[in-house]
Length: 236
Image (cartoon, rainbow, N blue to C red):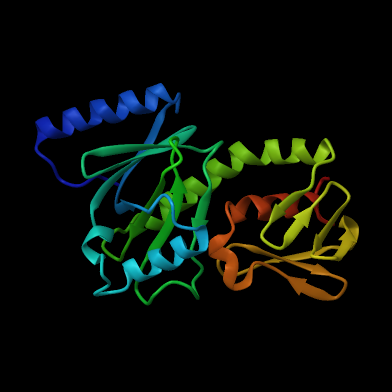
């Protein structure tokens, strides 16, 4: 749970910059520090193309393999995180970020854990942790919990106000859930988790879910939390 090795003086200066950036965005108390790798994704490429580009970057021998492996320091806070890579500090707020995680079927063999987040300036930052980063599952779980904790109440409030939320092909209201033109009231909706931690809905005897498009759905774990809250076994 430590960042890349640096000269003590350089570490002090970096920590001061990280603390200042986190303070400006009111991220609260620092909780943990992890090592990983990161790079920024092209800002103007379409989302689906960006995910495909990410996969090609992480394949061994890909055109930008070195760029995908830049050492990064991840500092997790109560309300967000910072990513320090190549002298730049990206600040991510849990209440506003969009997180995309590639599914196991999308990921190249031995690619490790990776996801794309939007920072406070709207730029996309790709986080990658291979076998050499033993804490990847831990920091991913912390990000997932933090974003869900920050965004689930707002999503529930939107449903209470009559809004309809969409996650890929799946849509939700306070009374029902559907996929395209097919829908069912919540008491009749079944759900199950996928291997990648997303969710599939059973509507009218047919299962619907993100499938191969899971990596293109922002905050799919927030969808999962909504379904678990609103479904037959939830509190509604």
